Picture 1: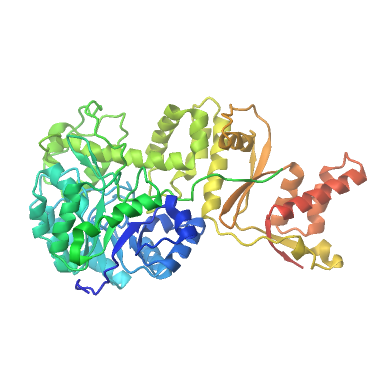
Picture 2 (picture 1 turned 90 degrees about the horizontal axis):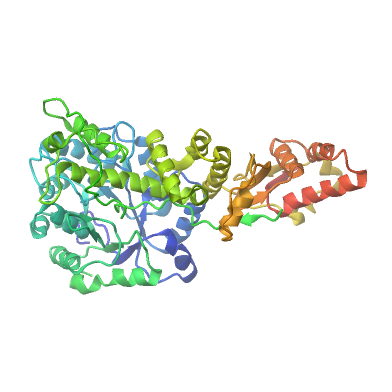
Amino acid sequence: MANKFGLPNLGIGLGLRTTHYSTIIAEKPDVAWFEIITENYLRTQGRPLDFLDQIAEAYPVVMHGVSLSIGSTDPLDREYLGEVRALRDRTKALWVSDHLCWTGVAGKNTHDLLPMPYTEEALMHVVERVRAVQDFLGSPLALENPSSYAEFAGDSMREWEFLGRLAEEADCALLLDVNNVYVSSKNHGFDPMTYLNAIPFERVVQFHVAGHTDHGTHIIDSHIGPVIDPVWQLLAAAAQRSSGVPVLLEWDAEIPSFEETHAEALRAREFIGAAA
Amino acid sequence: MNRQPTADALGLHERASATPARAEFQPESQLGSAPSWTEGKLDLRMQQQWFAAIVSTPEAEPAPVDERSAARLITPSATLSSLGRIDIYRQGYHARLIECLIDDYPVLQHALGEEAFEALCRRYIARHPSRAPSLNFFGRHMSELCRGEALPEPVFAADLAALEWAVVLGIHAPTAPSIGFEDLGRVPAERWPGARFTVNPSLRVLRFDYPVNAYLQGYRTDESPTVPGPRKSAVAVYRTGRSVWRLELELTMVTLVESLAAGATLEAALGEVQALLSDRSQEDAARLVSHCFQHSISSGLFSAVAL
């Protein structure tokens, strides 16, 4: 147990996607664990849960949310949190994560990971909400650094400082997405190693890797295609700074066969070395 | 009257933390000039309201701020203006929700054509922004929207959307094992008239002005169907196990199912069906009633019988 929360190193896992359900259920492939997108299994009593129940019986799962909206100035959605907690208990998910972002305001949900201003005001706001969420869930929340395409003029600190202080002050876990570090470093012009050097790795419970789309003027975190070498190198650098952090591949568009997706995830072995 | 399985995917608007690949910044997009916000510092909530207002503004409309105002909140990058950076989110917002509606309404998209359907989706998004954490039910207003839109065949489009939405609801509805003839064989003959049936909890019976199930099935079997003329039809949509079924219903079957679903005894429900067949010979009517009941059982519409 290398992280301060005692959460296990699950090895190399895959994001669970509907196109792979039938292969997983029929062939029971040797995969260490799956990450589910929380919201795909909320407010349904039907087929999605049928599949999930069967998969969660056979594999360890963790939950990755996209609608917690931890940075929003709207009140925390207690009904949603209750559903998240119930799904965690149903699937015996080992941890729950979401993003350092906001997804909407004034009751509307954009279903996008909108960027936070990195200010003292925002930091205090998010710290308080993370504490409230962790109290509600009764377990640590892991927050992921998002990819971003915009920076606020009023920022008083950089994202890595905000994230590090947030983790310490709210006593939460971190999900470090090294592809997001890469994407944001290109979009905002910073050195990704500066970012990694500021991360409190004892709080990192999971790594993400993914593909992205380079549009020349900016990079979109599209989760398309294989992971590029500079992102693998960032994973290697992050793994060197930590010990025993599980790695997960996200592939969300133009998804290839299960075998190909899994093979891409397993490439992480080449870069995490002894930390695997 | 064979039931047809939906050949849909697996029942999710698969959400992810990815930005849709369609969300490319288009330098030629019309951001235009718009009112700048008033002077003064914006607190976190005001910043979020301001940002969300731009993101949710339809892409065909100018952003509600000009570049100078945008730069007060968002810094330009080495390659993109302030509004250009926000526009990535604006396009991502619309692209994600359009993808969701395409997932729900592939046949409506075929019927209207891609361009007209996308325009319809944009009006949908403007009129019905999401307020839920999940996108599972985001598309629920499509039939209602179609009915009021200036589409070539708005009633057909509304009927088709209602059928496609019923399939989505079927995916997410709870279900229960169906009863079969072997279960009915255990019912003593004298108890038949008073028997009451519980319908599959996922069952929905829909009545249409157009034969939209035939159109949908034509699409699914790659027949490139054309928009049909009006003809009354009815369809049951329900799930057994992991399969969602569409069952075209004759009026007799609609009457039987709706009557039993409302709690009528079998005798009363069959009496209603019989009444519809008053122009038939007694023998013919009895045969049709029997067939109707047997078909409802073999199709798996009921999950329990109580005596």
